[in-house]
Image 1 (cartoon, rainbow, N blue to C red):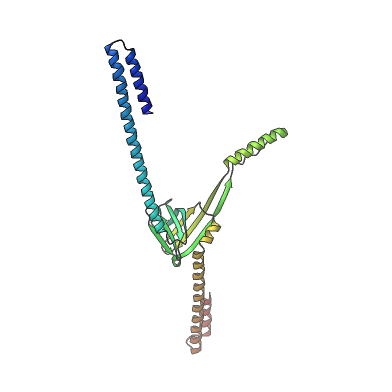
Image 2 (image 1 turned 120 degrees about the horizontal axis):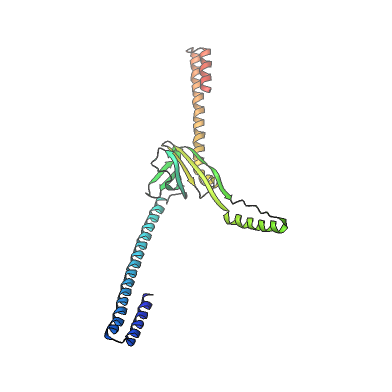
Length: 256
């Protein structure tokens, strides 16, 4: 563009010079196009410098992002499932900021939260999780809900076509899944739009299995403790240390 403008300016100057009647007009026909060409040259140089600077900034930003992506990938190398993009929407006991973007996943033995901005990684061992809940409506599709109408068959058809076009243009789907994690350290509420609750539950199966097995072990240990305590009371009753009434009262308390 600048070159074309300079050529046009030179041609105009030569034409003006050939048609000039005096020295002043001849001088102006040379000076003005020359000044114009110099200005075009300076503008072209400024444009080139600006483009080079933009390319440099773009390259630096791309290199920075690639470095961050590499660090994130390294931090998530042991994910058995994930990363799942989510946001912190509440909780206590952890150093999170509301609406903070995170990546969520699990390894063989832990639930892992990776803060995207700081790359801080928080691991919650399955044995340290007291409760894990995944819920939400999942994927919901909505539209404007316009219904066709009008007088007569022609009016109805026109209205129905218009309604279908409007509904098609305004139809959208959104996924909302919520995760609650209660651990020995604190409680975290998370929200993701990437996966439905049922699918996420399947992917988090190792964590749910660990919780179920821990619950079974606790129940089994509790049963053994009750049996041992009743056996101890029976021995005390047999030795005459406690009465039958005291034995019955203590047994009811243990079973309850």
